[in-house]
Image 1: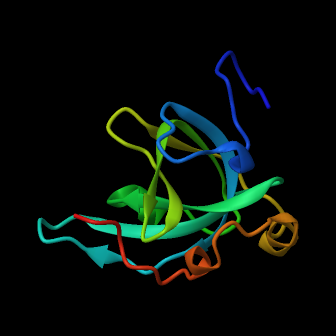
Image 2: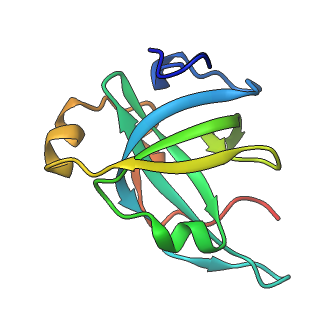
Length: 129
């Protein structure tokens, strides 16, 4: 998958500890907002591409801007295990950019494979502080 000169990966190819991840996905579900001790808002969201699904941890105002069905491009993200689930993060140098709105979430959900059944709950607690 290649949208520009940057190298993009599919969700099925993301591994724990991987850095500088560029991936395009659809937002399937938004988790509930958790407030951290220092006032930040964080939510875990289920996202997918044609090869699989994964959870992404979204912090602060960006979490309120994305909706199910949005097509998002993550650049310079990283992957780590959290509560036994492979999770994507934007990190300090990472960026999320909304690049489109598809017809239906259900069509993408049917194509998405499941990597971690426990990760599919949109009410997951936020990542460790």
